[in-house]
Image (tube, protein in one colour):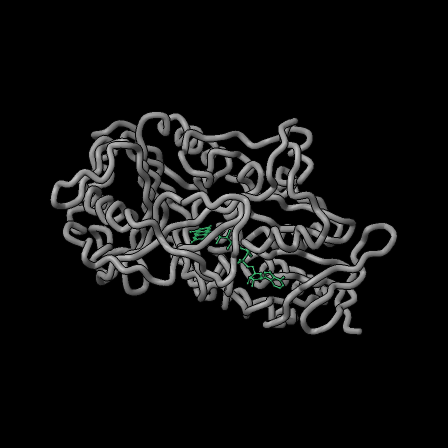
Length: 419
Ligand SMILES: Cc1cc2nc3c(=O)[nH]c(=O)nc-3n(C[C@H](O)[C@H](O)[C@H](O)COP(=O)(O)OP(=O)(O)OC[C@H]3O[C@@H](n4cnc5c(N)ncnc54)[C@H](O)[C@@H]3O)c2cc1C
């Protein structure tokens, strides 16, 4: 029977980063993926790398992740163009506390408060900025974006160069255990593999592996019974414009922009799109401008394959294009250029919408990032440390036990499960 000291299931950001760091420590590691490197969410993600999280533990982990992105921008196809979050109302307090924490942990950012001040800051960057009513701007000088698939191929090349083996087209179908509950053999479509340690990094497929491991589908969160997994469909698209249209006033690659607003949103012909709070994000892409808006809840059961799954709701292109035009005159009239491309996809969120990074059996570590994780390239480094017997202060807040003991993360005023 084939054997592997460390078997990693899934060749997305977490599996590849874990394999890279294990191999760098001189550990033998085999990654299996049922399809291929970057076949999952890491290969379809918008690629936004930001620190902006209301939860201290998320923010500290993201700062460590940005350091890794910055360590090799060429291999990771990473652009450190920064990130801007804009909002109004209750988001003033949230973004202010995020900014204050960033100052404490040494993460480079600037906070602008007041409608006139925010408008002026944005007009310095983009002369045609025109979004009204935004009263808070968190401008992160670090972070930015990377090209999803290219960055994963780069990460895979680092893992292989360090000595990791990556087997594509090999699906994990079951586990065999010893009396202590440790996994001894992993059943795959390519035959059984005897293992010492297993890392599950299966992205939106995590619920299937969770079930194969005999883990509970429902659990108590601070005394209230809940489903472990909820699927949300992330809607994304692009407009077919020359990326050079979306540059800053001095011609640089622009920061990723994320706008949440209560201002009434109208299409270019004046039709009202919505008078309720809306939110969008957008960035320069290789041949276009790409971004997304509110995710669609899909419930607790979802057929993940074939991936990426589903499509956007009918109103998404109108809302997203209207929001671009609402923000910048240069995007006026861009609705006919909207293209539904191979972007968008489903994510599996945990019971509290934050990651679970923990041992779920004596030798099985599960990386379930609750769909926060393309940017979380440092999680694999931390997992490799934990597998080597170290403690990870960065991963500790994401242990499974938090649900039972109620040691939960604070919740922000953002309308979405990702902030
Ligand atoms: C549309 C969209 C946009 C997003 N945008 C961003 C963003 O801008 N920034 C950000 O930080 N995050 C973003 N995310 C979230 C992010 O993409 C994910 O959280 C992250 O990529 C998950 O990485 P992963 O390694 O856990 O899983 P994945 O990248 O999904 O990799 C899992 C791999 O496991 C393999 N696999 C599954 N089951 C098995 C099995 N039984 N046997 C063997 N292999 C198996 C799959 O083939 C897959 O390749 C986005 C997500 C979506 C869907």
